[in-house]
Structures are given as C-alpha cells and as structure tokens.
Length: 366
Image (cartoon, rainbow, N blue to C red; front, side, top):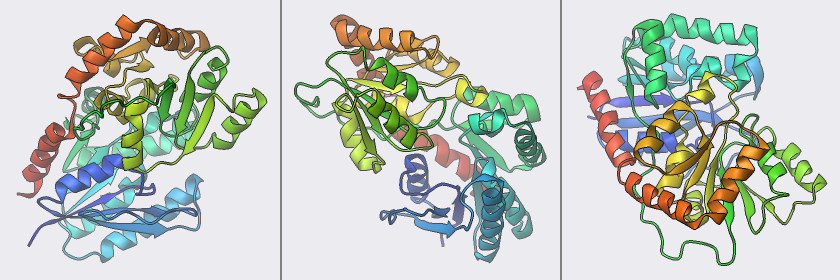
C-alpha cells in the first residue's frame, strides 16, 4: 500500500501549474491529495493522477478568510485516515497543517513557495506582518523538512532559524519549440500571471503608446483586472493591449512560443519580490522566447551563465521602453538571447528538479 502525502494551498487548483507538477511527480510513488478552495466562478478541475479536494468558505478574503479556511482545513485533515505526511504550501495553510501533523504524529513539511512575510500584500501592514512572522517563528524551527524555490530564500531561513531548506526550482517540463511559432505579421509582448500591484503592468500599458508594431497580451486576472481595462480604454489602446483572461496550463503552453518577448517585471516591494525567481521566467526560456526581467539577484545569477534576458535596473516607463525597443530593433541581440534560451532550456526543466523533489520525500518517508 502506497504511503499518502497531503499538500495544502489556499488557491483554486485549476491554474496552479507548480502544484500540478509537484503532485504529479509525487504520485509516481505515493498516494497524493491536493487540497485547495473552491471560488465563486471556479471551473471543474481537470483529471490528474492525484486526488483533488476543494473546500468552500463563506469568507473569501482578509483575515476572516484565513481563519475560516485554516479551521475548515484542520477539521478536514483530522478526518483523513492513513495519511503519512502533510505538506503546507506557504504560511497561509501552515497552522492547520502543523497542528494536524502533531495530533496524528506524522512528518510535517513546509514548502515555501513565497517568502510570505515580505509579500507586497503583507510587508507594509505592520500588524499583519508581525502575525505571520510570529507564526513562521513558532513553526518553521519544528518542521520535519522544508524546501523552497531558490537559494536566496533558503539562505534567509537558515540565517533566521538555522533550518536547512532544499531548493526545488519552479521550472516547466521540457517541451519542443514548434516550427513557425510566431503569429504572422505580429510582434507580441506577453505577460503571464496575476494582474496585481507591483507587477509593472500599469507601466507596460503606459509605454504601449510609444511602442510601434507590437501588441501587449496579458494572460491572467487579478486585483487590478478592472482598473487596467479602464486604463486601456482611457488611453484608446484597445487595438494594442489584449486581455486574455485566465488560461489553463495547456493553452498557456501553446501560446507562449508565439510571443516575441516575454515580460516578468516587478517593483521592489519587499524581499519576496526582490529574491523572486518566477515560473514565467523559465516558461519563456522553455519556449525559446527572450524576456525582460528585473536586475534582481536570482535573475542576474542565471543570466550570467545563460544570457536569456534583458535585465532592467528599475521599474520605470523609460527602462521598460528601452528594453522592449532594443529587442524589437536589434536583431543580433535578439538572436543571441534566443540562442541562450535554447541552451538554458536543456538545464532548467522539471525532469531534473523532480529528482531533487523525490529524493527529499524519500528521505522522510522511506
């Protein structure tokens, strides 16, 4: 009989590419259940080699949501029989996961997808940040094991708590790049991800007034969805900025290679963004698409070994515009970054990271 691993998140499961990859890999050797939540306009989950459960909450945001969700999650975890390990993804599910693991006397793993107390939604709210820091300080030193998405965040945890975190990067499966992948007659600037504060989307829309012969495609939704659409209308940029909405992983994989430039822009709103290493950065590499990113440590580290991107020093309209025009106009520079992507795409693949992930869990369960 396979041992069982339960992974917990607060988001809708349908669009969570990272957890789909992780749970698919774990399901080769273990029984796996991924627990998330059901939202108002959610769509049915797609069939996966692991089970999926979504909890329904009365509250859907703010502190009442986190309290309600953790209570519901705790009671659900306590009801499950024969589970052998609980893994909480980020601090927002860690209380329920840790308490349930102690009651059941089973290993508890912390998957730090984000450096949670430094997220933009948290870092400038003193009371909220201190609450999450207290939760982190209480539980992280007691975990059975932990892993995170890059070395910078792993170093932070070791410095704070003397706890070693493994690094399992958030990279895609290896994919072939389709021939004649570009859309005829169009140069596409692609942003994929949440339309939230600090992602540089407002600045991107502003610069589109000065970018010729290119369209900006935004794949995702978020807190700024309505505001950004109104901004595009005010600037009469409907022909140059397209909102694609939520796309399922397969549709997004098919779309990305069609882009001319990938965009991954962040405002330095805290250490979570500063030490980030976004999955979209690797998605662009895998699709052979040069990208524009911030000159933050993790991107600098990779770009030194594999030149795949233009890194900009600040999130300003001028810096963004200059980087876009450089890649649109300098064919030699553009091709050199394409060549860098073709080399990097053999290195940054889930087939390699999966080995690290499985070794981590084997050390705890086998």
